[in-house]
Length: 443
Ligand SMILES: C[S@@+](CC[C@H](N)C(=O)[O-])C[C@H]1O[C@@H](n2cnc3c(N)ncnc32)[C@H](O)[C@@H]1O
Image 1 (spheres, rainbow, N blue to C red):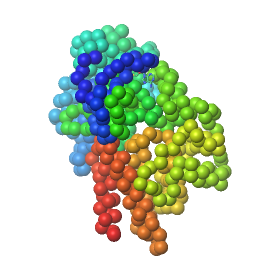
Image 2 (cartoon, helix red, strand yellow):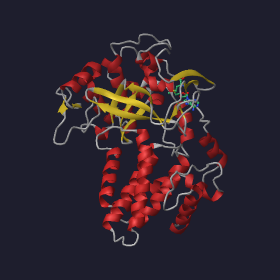
Image 3 (cartoon, rainbow, N blue to C red):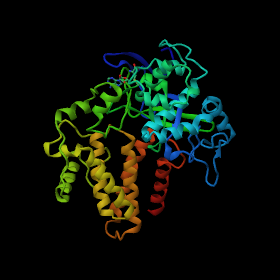
Image 4 (cartoon, helix red, strand yellow):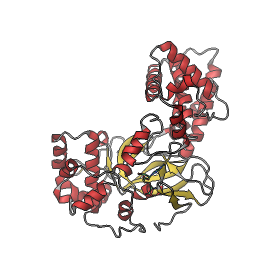
């Protein structure tokens, strides 16, 4: 592949065909590569709320313009509409409603419907433009896509759901579909999923790690498809492989099966090795008393006290004591997240402080350094402590809580600035600034 790359190059990999290694020192927060979406589709829940081309929300008080042909695609303005029309929609528009009724009639799951819609966009995009070359040496994104390692083939049910007008060649559709499942990225805004997209160059370059040193973020701009920027999460040395997460590393129990089933590989990262050496992950206890002592012990193991130090701890997974292994059960993170979110919204601050700090300990145990989810959670902790400060009777402990807000905010600020701005306006970086201003005005 002879695409010009600034700071990485592809070299052979023993099991994954190739790997992207850095040719220069890359500092945390640098963009390793930017890749525009070749094709994309909004999640059903976002359809009609965002522009189908650029994925932006309309400005307050403004409405999106509806496609008069199918009445199912929405745009910021005629520029966005023209981009999508020329790229794919003129070939998808007429058959869209029929395809959607068919998908519902045949009881396709939401996930299957998403796949078929994205595939219809892909076919609309490529119907008239056959790949320039099927050799692995082209800049053309369609050729790069077809050079990707194939996964599973399309089922007849999927093939039957695609409008015939979009199929020129059955075997080409199979070739495309077989590279779909393992090269389908979830597009997010402020880390919330809003759509799916295909980014052939990013797929070709980056292997997966559960402790990645880079992560994709998605940038929206007027009249252009979403852009993926792969951002370095930490400083990397020359020769280090740059990896991204294909899945949320918090899927501690299910991820190895998903890698096998969807991507056809066994992850050899140190996190997967440590988890498999720990053996069977037991279920967390039911009783609230034992749950609470589990949380205390986890915080102690990780080193999360009420007042965080200047550096965040980097706990070892391999030394995790037997009694704490159940903290890796996926249901434990789910439970803590629910508890924290409910308590902080309802103003039950004591519960929120407790579960929020345990959740932070769990994040630090599972996620790699500077992972954006850690930054986002630290921001939530700062907001929760701030809300407690202004709504509760905090005489005597006000100064302590204020200093906790500052510390959470400074860690959140460092991590979220490395990840940078993603997606919609008014994101976490704006919230950081706002809270910092409130804090300065209050002291
Ligand atoms: C999106 S491609 C990544 C680019 C791939 N290295 C190539 O040469 O095309 C995804 C495929 O790469 C391989 N792969 C990715 N990460 C891997 C890993 N950590 N270990 C082994 N194979 C991996 C798997 O075959 C997977 O289905």
